[in-house]
Length: 426
Ligand SMILES: Cc1cc2nc3c(=O)[nH]c(=O)nc-3n(C[C@H](O)[C@H](O)[C@H](O)COP(=O)(O)OP(=O)(O)OC[C@H]3O[C@@H](n4cnc5c(N)ncnc54)[C@H](O)[C@@H]3O)c2cc1C
Image 1 (spheres, rainbow, N blue to C red):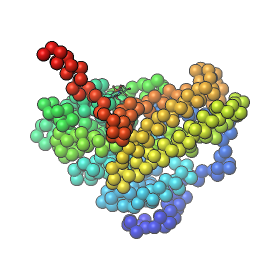
Image 2: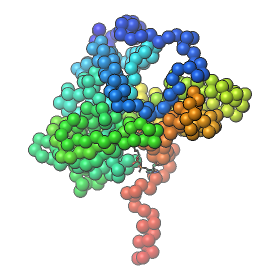
Image 3: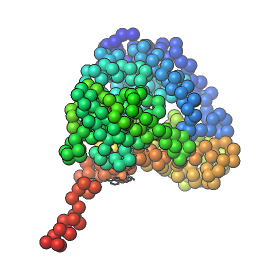
Image 4: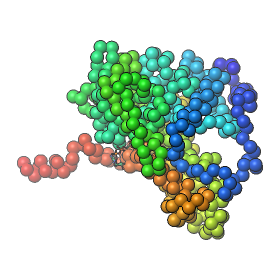
């Protein structure tokens, strides 16, 4: 492995190919893999329903693959060399992703939040202690990270968090409850936003920390969702001790830290394809569905499918532009919110289209291949409209910051009706 930014993309590709050939199985050629209706697995879930033992096995496979990549110098291609990165360009990273897609590799979804959101926040706001303790081990796959932001009373209005952190010498004691924490059941570290000064205006009295998910006082309880699986959790903190050197950013400056994480979250969700394209809900699968049910000459369904497919491609490229800007150290503009909004719009359109093609077949399991399996996709779509900022909140951002429309009256805004009432009674 050569560790310098002087490696040309061509030389890097040669290095990647030899790593992949030595460590993974090449996928069968596209010709051989052509989708055939009724053959293979018909699962198309957005949130997989998976039993805990299988999840543990998949996680172990994913960790092995990340460790192999990292030890070969391919675990953090754009990252700083002091934490095991290669300090190479986005073009190198894209080359790796393109080449790896030609090989059978474990599902890396376990690391999406940790590496896509928590690690970039540690890099931007962490102390040397947290950077040394976590960046290398998270990128090597030894530690998995989760995002502990939402609470029963703080979702869209994240600044309403009530989980308290109280200083105790060189430590903080964290107590409270988080909710909807994806992947907390297998996470080792979490980024938690806490209230540290209830007397300050709410955006100013919060502080962010990196917390050990195995520390005494942390309790993770799974939440079962309507698709059947349990990918999120409630997380309870009871006087959990966190050293002050695990603080992210300054005391009471947690809002700025949270924004770094949210920016990365929206960009990484938006840059996904939601499974359409090369994924489970591929255009081949959808076209085959139309043919199988004798609807391939229906001009409306054909036209809609084409529009949906184009929408996914445009949305994905928009999201990727935002992700590339963030990784290049720039602030993304409207593309971040628009990319996320476009993805959920497209997922909803695809769910509605599929429901129309399949009709009652998605409501009851008759054992017919490729039909009821879509229920998990359709029921998973609303979750995507909420996670990472809801559609309504994204629209507010686009309306206010892109179109320059007047600010939406938030729950803390002075109500115009209150003014009117005050005036009327004076
Ligand atoms: C798939 C998924 C994964 C998630 N993973 C995590 C995670 O790992 N970590 C984590 O911390 N959280 C996670 N969440 C939680 C997520 O961030 C929240 O669900 C989201 O921020 C919305 O908050 P809420 O559920 O409290 O809804 P609320 O904020 O209570 O919103 C309820 C409704 O009111 C609307 N609304 C709220 N405010 C406004 C406004 N100002 N203008 C217009 N409409 C408004 C919303 O759009 C929504 O329709 C996840 C959620 C999902 C669905």
